[in-house]
Image 1 (tube, helix red, strand yellow):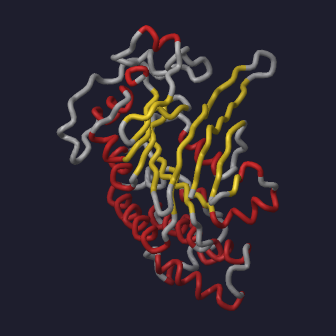
Image 2 (image 1 turned 45 degrees about the vertical axis):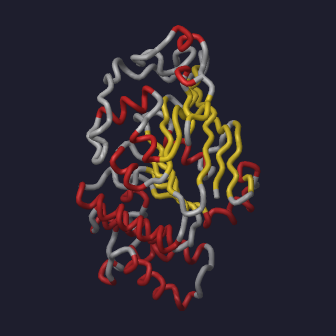
Image 3 (image 1 turned 135 degrees about the vertical axis):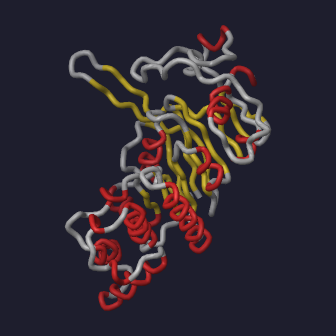
Length: 313
């Protein structure tokens, strides 16, 4: 369904003495049909940037994104617009995803009108159908976003996305701003909708318990790089990279009590504007070797996954 090949994105800061931030530095992974791929890591590691690069909400500096055999990084604007209904995004803040002066009826109807998906006479019926599908009622049609809760607004956003019949969705921490009980409802709804419509998904989150529940495969990011990828259960049960081990060990994950307790991550995340040489994690790694300070590790196959660490070379 989706193949990401060595995508990169660098941001610059300053006019005279420019500094550069490699937000995404050579990230590659694949997502199969009806599969959910999880992306985890600390704040600022580049997770959200990866999602936006895939959809070309940002333009990558290098690399390719191939969707259903089409390299979308090379598409012109008219062709990209035709591709948009098939690739959608759920943003973290549902409230800011909806126009504050548009009623819910108008917000959900907007994509239907924009892409002429249903006749004008059938739009109202379709809007009601979409809202009921995500657990809302007719009474919500004439309300504004500020009159709904955060969970209800996220349901409205999901209805807008599903109106286009997407084949791929980027879910950028869609439940992080919600109460725990509401989070469970939205995650259950997303699972239900994926079963019904069969879309693939890139699920971005810092919550490891959510990643374990929602995804079949996952990747772990650190300072713009993927340090480990593999089947979700394999990564949780036998994490390879020291950073992954520390992340999973730091939180209590249901079903992971058998994991051996590892040393906590020490120190602060390095300045992304001035990252360390060699392995970017070596300044905080309890298992670092001399080579880690000098040479950046290659990505190698380990079992059913991949890891970028000198311990496995």
